[in-house]
Amino acid sequence: DQQVKQNSPSLSVQEGRISILNCDYTNSMFDYFLWYKKYPAEGPTFLISISSIKDKNEDGRFTVFLNKSAKHLSLHIVPSQPGDSAVYFCAASRERMKTSYDKVIFGPGTSLSVIP
Amino acid sequence: EAQVTQNPRYLITVTGKKLTVTCSQNMNHEYMSWYRQDPGLGLRQIYYSMNVEVTDKGDVPEGYKVSRKEKRNFPLILESPSPNQTSLYFCASSLGRAPGQPQHFGDGTRLSIL
Image (cartoon, rainbow over all chains, first blue to last red; front, top):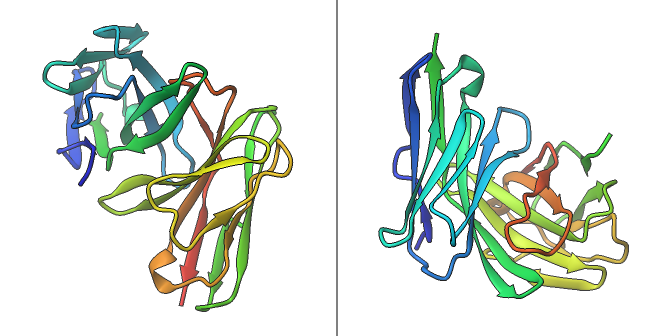
C-alpha cells in the first residue's frame, strides 16, 4: 500500500504556462515533504521542501502548497521551461525523535514534458 | 566538488554470486541511505544509517545488507542476489539528522541479475 501517491504518471505543458504536479499521502504522521527532480542517467536532485506547520513555500519559479486536511500537496512551476522536463518525485518523512527522522517514503514520480 | 560516488555504475551478474555496491560521500554527512527505483514504484528505501555503526531498515530490506564503519562509506551488499533484485540503485546522503534535510544522490547503479 503506497503511502505517497502521485496519480499522474505524466504531464505535458506548453512552455511559459504553469505546471502543477500533485501528490497525496495517507499517513498523517508525516512532518516534512520534499520534491526532487530527476533527469535521465542522473540521481534525483532536491528541489523544494515544506514542513507540516506551513501551507506554502516558495523558491523562485517553484512553489509547494500543502493541504494537511486533504493530505495533499502540489508543486507549481511558473513559468514552465523546457529544462524543467524531468521526472518529479514527491517524498515524505516523519520525525522520529527531536534530532532525527525516520525513513523517507517516495512517490512513484510524475514525468513532466515542457513543450517549446 | 561535493558528491556522492557509487561504483560500479553498471553490473550484470548471475544469481547467487555475492556482490557489493560501494557508496562514498565527501561532504561529512551523517545520514546515508540506499534506494532502489523500479518502474511504477518510484524510489523505495532499502536501508539507512544515521551515523557510524547505526543502521536501520527501510521499506524493502530483504536480501540486502549494509554496514557503516566509516562516516563517508555506506556499501550495499547482496549476499545471494536473485533476479528480483534487478533494479536501479541510488545511494544518498544528507548533512544532518534533522527532519526534512534534503538528500544528495549519486548517479545510480544499474544491476542486472540473470
